Amino acid sequence: MKKLLCLFLVLSCSVSSFVGATVQPSQWKVPAIYVFGDSTVDVGNNNYLTTTTAKANYPHYGIDFPHSTPTGRFSNGYNAIDFIASHMGFRRSPPPYLFLNDTNNHQIVKGLRGVNFASAGSGILDSTGTNIITTTKQVLYFEAFRSKMAAQPNADQVAMRLSKSLFLISSGGNDALAFATANKSPNNTAILLFYNNITSKYENHIKNLYGLGARYFAVINVPFIGCVPSARAQNSTGGCIDSMNQLAKGLNDAVAALLVKLSVALPGLEYSIGNSYEFLSTVISKPHLYGFEEVKSACCGSGKFNAESYCTPNATLCMKRSRYVFWDFLHPSQATSKLASALFYNGPAQFVGPITFKQLVKSAY
Ligand SMILES: *[C@@H]1O[C@H](CO)[C@@H](O)[C@H](O)[C@H]1NC(C)=O
Ligand SMILES: *[C@@H]1O[C@H](CO)[C@@H](O)[C@H](O)[C@H]1NC(C)=O
Ligand SMILES: *[C@@H]1O[C@H](CO)[C@@H](O)[C@H](O)[C@H]1NC(C)=O
Ligand SMILES: *[C@@H]1O[C@H](CO)[C@@H](O)[C@H](O)[C@H]1NC(C)=O
Image 1 (cartoon, helix red, strand yellow):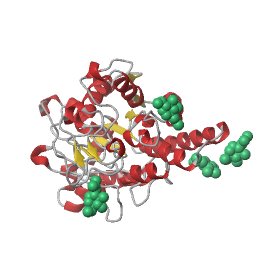
Image 2: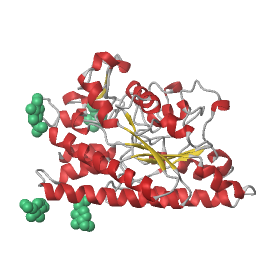
Image 3: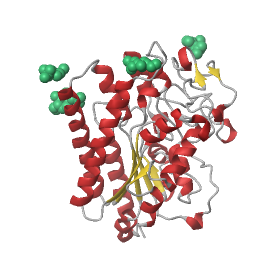
């Protein structure tokens, strides 16, 4: 499990984004999307971090991205936030914050449609991940960006814009992985303490964003992490690691209860949870129904289940990339992200609730 953790933390992310868009700007439904979380939604922030190993800015990452560009996304192409932004009518998903900061000029203009603060390897807890941007820091970056917006001539519109924007958070998987690695057979007390730590920090992050003007939250929960290729590689029979799935399930239940509580306590707060756990477990149990052929091995990597290295230039690459649920040892393929995003956006209720992302976005108007 030690190895699994190292791999996981190394896994993070990407660059600027050209969304696989088919929707016109006239169909925009919210002014902007602000993105927080880990490698599942990082589009390039970690490219700017010199000391992190959690990077995906080299081949074969991005092989199916336009011009086969490795962007820092942990995918063969686009990731979930690209497809979600596309469903919402954006031509591109929001740029990485550190890219905006790097360019310096026109930062606000470029960030007007939103900013992506996500950093691969990060978690809800500050203790998760090394040399990455913690969620606490991501929120501070958002605060800094908001101050710059508020210093612009049209500052009076900032609060209104933010109150109609979507705040998407996809995190928690790295926390669960770190906990599972550090605690071989945790008792119930230790597990409950872990859940409490997560919900208390998650509550802080959401309250801080709410205090800064956020009202609409799209949360993507922790996937079926016991069945990712790097987990299977730890099981001598090649099965999933059941305890990791149970840990993720409990964590998701705790976060769902937290959101119910917060939506009552904080006037105007609305949310939707994309059920990544249910999505992945369903696809893995009935792959053919969803157009997949391979649910165990990663498309790109090396060793057992192609899960024992990153997707490096000399790694083994599968032929039918769109038929693999997993792109690398830990991350979904572009095909998987595309399907998940469509289900989170449109439903059915099995995969998203209490309302769909589409209904959440609509209720902003
Ligand atoms: C549960 O585990 C924790 C940490 O490993 C330990 O300190 C505690 O004594 C255990 N509690 C019980 C009831 O076994
Ligand atoms: C949870 O928080 C307590 C108190 O801060 C700490 O002692 C414990 O190590 C944390 N456990 C986990 C799994 O985060
Ligand atoms: C390993 O996989 C088998 C199914 O093939 C399962 O029964 C077993 O519980 C798994 N081991 C762990 C540690 O989860
Ligand atoms: C790729 O090459 C590097 C350096 O030569 C080596 O360390 C690594 O193990 C190789 N990876 C694979 C997947 O063969």
